[in-house]
Amino acid sequence: MHEKYFDHAATTPVDERVLAEMLPYFNEHPGNASSIHHLGKRAEAAVDLARQRVANLLGAEDPYQITFTSGATESNNWVLSRFPIDRIDASPFEHSSVRNFLSYHQCYRGESGLELYAQVLIDNETGAVFCPAEEKKSRGALEVLVDATQGLGKIAFDLEGLDFVSGSAHKIYGPKGVGFLYEANPHLTPMVVGGWQEFGRRSGTLNVPGIVGLGMAAELAREEREVNFAQATELRNIIREELDGIDNLKFNESANQSPFILSVSVLGVEGETIVLDMDQKGFCLSAGSACSSKSTALSPLLLSFGVEPEWIRGTFRISIGKDNSRESSRELGENLRITILNLRNSKKS
Ligand code: PMP
Image (cartoon, rainbow, N blue to C red; front, side, top):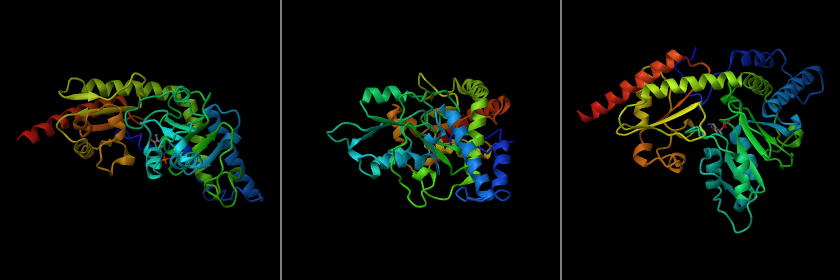
């Protein structure tokens, strides 16, 4: 249905099977998961199953280590807000929900030791894959927050040595506005206080349909991870081959690269112009990440990646998902080639 949608790192369509699991929890089973009557119990059981499914995807020992939140932004903010601001540091490749939290709160590294280090698992702009456990060790941090939003269900990773892991349903074919935080040893004090839901860690009436959707999305991501990985690898290669050989074009790639993201920089054309032109042809891409697309500042992440400013202006992101096909990938590559050459020519004339 969404063959020409190549913006899966921004969000994914909800999988039909996920939607089917969610729907009854809007009206057929409308209970509040905290209520003690049968409809409440029904909702609670669905939430328990979802928690187990998320734990399975992560390889967590105990579903009790998972707390449901409104998404990875909240999960990241929650962890960061519980540590002294001068004892936090983060990699330069963090999502805005980490980066802007720290700049908003004027984080500076104090003299005393590092308590928390934030390290994204896969960055959302280039798809570079990191090893958070090693980063934690080399930084000498006591604890590490791993933002696994772009890696969850896509690459295998080990919880060994990780203290906090955040994730979001809408990047794995689940609904928007629901996510989770994994804590190896649940000990964070709550950021959201009220009716003491979620073991007292995160108050607010549970978003039961959303949580059910996250659970089902996690289950499918676990079962289909290898197939999805192989498909993305193949499609990425097709697109890459189509673009290879265009003058003044480069791929922003790292040695350990996610196959789900292809970041491309060209000289002489704005990334946004390419995205808008491709939109006319029915393709959805992104210039930088969707979360920062309203900002005109150069992407700090690409700067940290070593991409020069004139190349950053001409950067766009292709993010691959299970709806894409070989045909649409080939078509994307061909159309991009035409678009880039035409835009360059029209600038000259
Ligand atoms: N971290 C990363 C790496 C992301 O890509 C995103 C979403 N773009 C988030 C966090 C934020 O997730 P959410 O939309 O669930 O708040």
